[in-house]
Every structure is written in structure tokens, then in C-alpha cells.
Image (cartoon, rainbow, N blue to C red):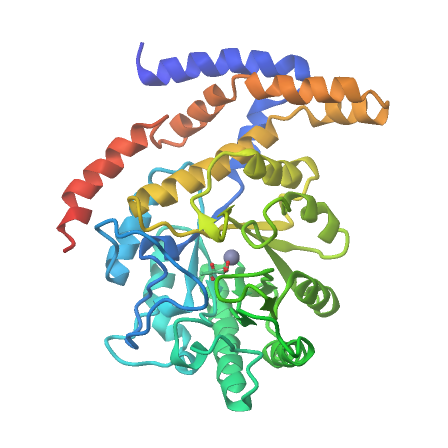
Length: 422
Ligand code: RNT
Ligand code: ZN
């Protein structure tokens, strides 16, 4: 029996297992095919970018490891992304940071960037039929070296970053317009303190004012949507982060912005899964940075664990697929970077598929009847349904490698392409 027949046969018997639970497997696969994941460009080169300032990675972001073969140029990064996209079922998106512009060897400062510096990326996205998202880069820069940007006490420095962020929104609009797919531009800043501040209020007041200045210009939400990303603590900002969760929740609500929930930005036992249905009572849309926190690091490669399943489940079971923009955010320099992208994205899709195969109606009926015994019993039994067969069939039907077959392709790519980058 060939692979296609085998996957097809396993799939038909899997479909039969889900039928008594009233789970429509075909509809689940259709829905999954319509959910784009925004792939973060920064996994490809350890958040390096293509500027010419010679500044090291900053803002508390640390990429550990020195696995060979990282992308050194935009063309290499695009080639690696193409390889990755060929191993992942469905149509996805690219999430680009401003420091990945193409500046032709010139020093173009962050307050000087224009859509022209991103033309190649936009053209590439168009060729590949994918949408794009965007991010100001408010770190790895001399004007962010003391740990403050939009909340900096120095007005001139604040204005520099305001100008950068405003330009990023305009670039986002150019991206959205050219591709005909709305761009989400996400503002994250590293501002914070290692030790106990004497003044927690003033930096927050300055941040609110800076954000208002950035968002003063009206940009059509068809072209670009603005998002703001909170964090509770970071490396070097253990005692105080200006843009905390409460700060940005209040900001997003009062200014009608998207809130970005990063899975690695909360206390270790605090899950963003529970926040989704809470904030979506009051906000029309949100952005997720799907990541994995491990102790003090917020950015490990996403694995198929309970946290990830819970996030996917909350999006799907509550009917939030249209209101939640899903992006990835992690960087691991200790393993093959194409594999890191592939593993995390495939896992996120598998979590979404698992959620789409949940017998939600049955679970809710049990819950509404007060029959928590049935709810728990079903929640546990569905864990051993043949979900893997459905996933394999999906990969097969989208012409991407089934099971771990993608790994052989990555190893081959490493041998023929990545290992040549010295
Ligand atoms: C940092 C934030 C932010 C960055 C990227 C590179 O803690 O999560 O989203 O990871 O902008
Ligand atoms: Zn993030």
C-alpha cells in the first residue's frame, strides 16, 4: 500500500471514531486550512536583522546557541522561509521586524525607514501569495541602550522612537495595500528596570503620551491594525516593566487597539488561554504571540503541550477564529533554525486541529446539565482518539511531508545549503 492509500485508510477509520461524538472531521480540516499562522522572521537569524549599526541584540532578548547555518542576508532568510513553508500545511503569513529592512549597505536609522526598504519582502510575499505583519524594532539600538524607548525621560529620544513607530504603521499600511491583506503592526518595547523604581508612574504616563502620538494619524483598519504587547518582567527588567499587562489592557480598551497576548510574558502558572475569552468580551480583536516560557526565558520553541492545546482550544471552542490573529514568537539558536520554525508551526496547527476535533457540544451539554463527571470523562477520552491519522491525512492532502518525513528534507537542506554558510 502506498503512503497516500495508507493515510487515506487510516483517515476513514479515524473519521468513524469521531462520528459518534458528532464531530465533523471534514469541516474541521476545512476550518484549519483557513487559519493563517504568522511566521516570525526572527527565528531565522536569532533576532539579528540587516542593519549596519553593529549593535548587539538588546532589550533583554537573548538567543542562546550557535548552531551553524543562520541566514546572513535577506535572500538567505527568504530561502529558509520558503523551505519552511514547504513543510507546513496551509497558507500562512510572514511577521517581519523593522530591522529586517534592506538598506543597500547604507546606514538608514530607524526614524528614516520607508516602505521602499521593504519592497523585496512585500514582492516576495506577493509571489508566495501570503500576507504580512510588521513590528517596530525598539531594541538593539544605541538610543535603546539604557533600557528606555517610548517612555524615556529624554524627550528627543522619545520622539525618535515615536517617529520610528509611526513609520512602521505607514509601512504596515503599504504592506496591507499592496498585498490586499490587512497587516497587523505590533508595538513591543523593552522599557523597564532591573531594580525597584522610585517612580513607577512617570514612565507610564510618558508611554501613554508617546503611544497617543504614534496613533494620532488615522490609518485605515483595512490596511493596518495596531497592536500593543504587554510583558510582566524580562531579563534586566525584573522589577518593573513600563508596558505591563494592566497598562496595555487599559490602553487597548480605551484606544480601541488590539492587545497582544504573548504566552511567555506572564507568571509561570498563568496561562494566556484563560485571558482570551476575558479580553474578547471587550475588545473586537487580539493578536497572539504563541511561545513557550521555560523558567526565565519566554521564547522556547513551541511544543505540543497542555498550554498550547489550551490556547488553541479557547480560540476554536469559543468561535474566535476570525477575531484572533495568531503569530509565533520564539528564537532558538541551538538547533537547526528551519527545523525550529517547522516544529513550532506544525505543533500550533496540530493543537488547532485537536481543538477543531473536540466534541464541544457534548462537553457543554454535560456541563450545562451539571454532569461534570461526563465532562471530565469525555475530556480525557478524546485524548486517545486517532487525531494523528487526521493530521497525517491533512498534511498529505496539502502536499507536505507526513509525520517526521519533513526532517529528512531539513537535513538535506542543511547539507546542501545551510552548511555552505561559513
Ligand atoms: C519580547 C516580545 C517581542 C519580541 C519580538 C522580537 O519579549 O515578545 O514580541 O519577542 O518583537
Ligand atoms: Zn512577543
